[in-house]
Length: 79
Image 1: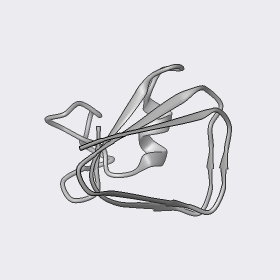
Image 2: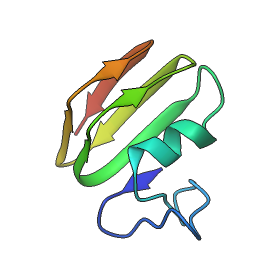
Image 3: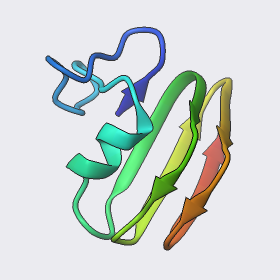
Image 4: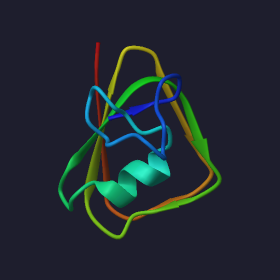
C-alpha cells in the first residue's frame, strides 16, 4: 500500500496499516507479479524503472503522473 498523505518510506511496511509514501519504494518492496495499492493522493516521480511485472491498483482519488515508466505495468482502478 502507498499513501501520499499518511505513508512513510522509513517506517512503513507497505501493508494497509503502515503504507509507504512513494511509488518507487513500493516497487522496490513488491514481489514480481505483485500489486501495489495506491490509497489516495497524487504520486509523481521523474522516472520509474520496473525490473519486474507490477500491477497498480488505485482506489478513490488517485493521480499518477510519471515522466517515464519503463517495464511491465498493468493499471487497474476501482471506486
